[in-house]
Length: 391
Image 1: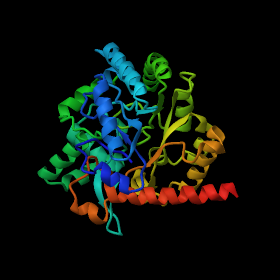
Image 2: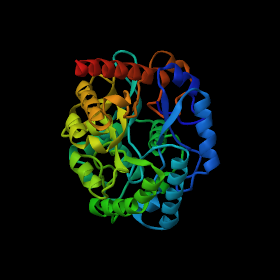
Image 3: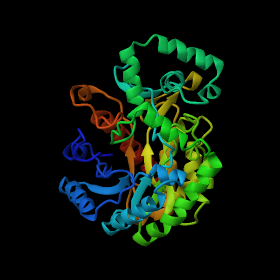
Image 4: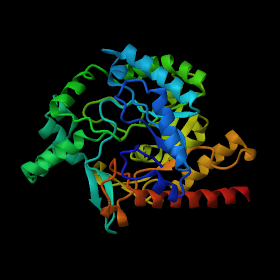
């Protein structure tokens, strides 16, 4: 399971009781772009080990915005990234997840969408996000990115919101950074977007290539495998280029640097929000370069709406994905190396049962009970399919 560190409202002791054997974690207290101190890495590793768990995957070492735009102090930030990889490798951590999403790590419009069974899920509604873009942020050029029907619906939605509701919605959107609150204002966001105004997908991909060319050799020396996370959602937002949204994107990225240290974090939920993605096929065709796995499902709805659903339901064919992953694992590691060599975690569980009585999770989607349900379902699916394949 993912653990956001000592400030997480979910404890390591609770995570161990769910059946998890390892955590995906990071030093969220270190500012973006700064090198992680070796002693801080060791201390976090010892804390996790003392709870009977392993720190198998770092999620994540954030890529500073200056690196993505190749502006400002990007040379120093790349050097700090190399140093961090070396220190993580020296500590025995083998996988580092990162993303190359400009400005915003992920986007949802509803953090507590009530479902018919009483549980609560994350949801993305393009009309609500259009309202933020057009009427709260007032981004230059935003009108061209939304249809007349979407603009009219966004205006209608905004008119139904009280000033307090508008402020809360705006604050929520500005704060969607996993494990950290950056305290951005609308002006801050406008300034960040301005840096990308002349950066199309080709230029952003080239900046990724330059970044990889500089850090993959360090990862190789350190024994670390890099795993780039798909865009979430896998389509353009706020006029920003997206380059990790389709199988074609993934193939192009893997071709930027030819190294086994350069690979993918396979996220079925992020990729699954785009109907054209063949999720099991991506595993079969690109599985040799998958270094970490996030498993979750989404239910796609009309008009571009989607919400996080239970792990074995919705628009994502989870049994087909798990079978493809098991087959890839067998091909890569062989029967003599034990089970579950591809480190995976359940992602974005529902709020349910006792979750409503606890302090809010460190990040939306990371309640303990909802993720435990997902983990239990995925473990059962793994074991059942694995036995079937053995027969």
